[in-house]
Image (cartoon, rainbow, N blue to C red; front, top):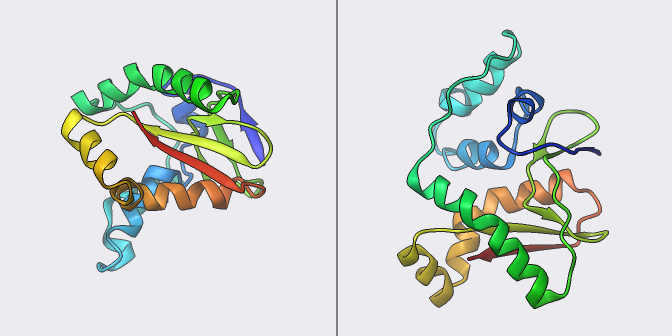
Amino acid sequence: MKIYEMEQGSEEWFAIKYKIIGGSSLAEIMTKINKPVNNTAKYLDILSAHIEPFELDEEYISSDMERGNSLEPIARMEFERVYSKKVRQVGWVEMDNGIAGISPDGLIEEGEALETKCPARKKHMLYILNPIELLNDYLWQAVQYFVVLEKLKKLYLASY
């Protein structure tokens, strides 16, 4: 396992994860499982990346993504306060074989990690009232944590 210390969302971060299946891309591929896998846009994007050099594209940032980016540090601090655990931020964690990786919201101690979601208030309320919806929405991303972090025993999936 390789851990890269860098800012998530930086050009370096986009370059390091180019050609690699990440948590969000795994979700995009797997949620289209009823279609032939070679017809999904994300699958084609990852495959085509192997024949072309990295080039930074302008990334689309929705208001939900902006909300997540601004609230994630607060959510992480609140998690540390409530659980009395220190969360380490890293940019990217990759399997030794380079096939898959993940941008964790935090590594905690050996065998634990944190993934935070900061959805709009209605979605957040849905997660509070029915926590299984949070897991349903981010199942493949959660699976990716366990694939990449071989010694992971506990993933905290939190909505803030």
